[in-house]
Image (cartoon, rainbow over all chains, first blue to last red; front, side, top):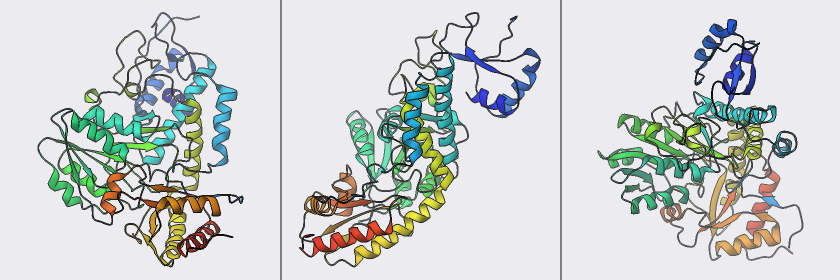
Length: 61
Length: 391
């Protein structure tokens, strides 16, 4: 939720959704965004001390 | 029984009324959102998680906490204090507390004492005041922490938290503060006040519903060495059967009281928008008026320092020759004034203040109390003290 607030504030296009089966069987939520935005996302999250498990690149669509 | 609109002077027990947004927020959550926060990935669960996270951010803002995830939600300050004390103290450790504590501190400490933790209760003066040097003297090589309240729920007098924080930093021990009586009505800054663990309740000065509260855990606490009170589902790390070790999930298991926390968020928004300083100033003004009127009533004596520089909106008193329960009953039945009599779950404080075992009558005002209510209450007490009835 912290990551969502930070990215929305930084105008990065994101979507929250259940963690895809390829990544985990957890009942958690993840944040999806486009690969080109990865550096900006990492920067914003670090600047705001957001804690997250990992960023994984997937080939979807 | 007096049928006029009652005067609610028991805010030290729980605050009433709440700002209008609070009930609305609870109803809105139940009627429109409803889902279990963060467990499912659907839009309603995500919205519920936003409510929860939003409340953490408001707590962080109010108490100047560096990150919202340092705010664990519990059902009340008592649970928070149990979590902190039982989480951190092991047999062989030494803990220090004061002579003005509520049973939410004393009872877990006495239970821990029976299990091998040594406890020192630093005495306070007969007026309920604490000398920081006395706390410093009590510290030993095996001392793990100091636990203290910010303001007494009996006499209303503030304890010198920042001075004790400084002592704890100098001696490299932890400070747990019970801010049940000060949260939302007196400025608290966990960083400037050097508080390591802050136990707060949602249903008093934070103006939220009962069943909410929390513990703010500061950076000096090694959470790997702090045992949770319970383990269970958190919606994270579900592939493991071990409780996660990160904040706040380490100390939150099971579905939270999300409707309550939605209400707490509305209470926090109200407090932040009015401003804690404005609330404190208003309450101080009310107390000045009340105490001036009380001092004028023959036979009535105020417990503790009647005119401390700053206090919270709580005052305890007795009337010579009358029992507190008789006074309380007459106040309710004849005059419609609601307050709490007895020992206020703080036998230690009453022993220090000299009102044990009979106890006292306690008025707890709030930001919403009025000068007119104060005058009516003083008139009622004058009549009771003079042995007259209301008719």
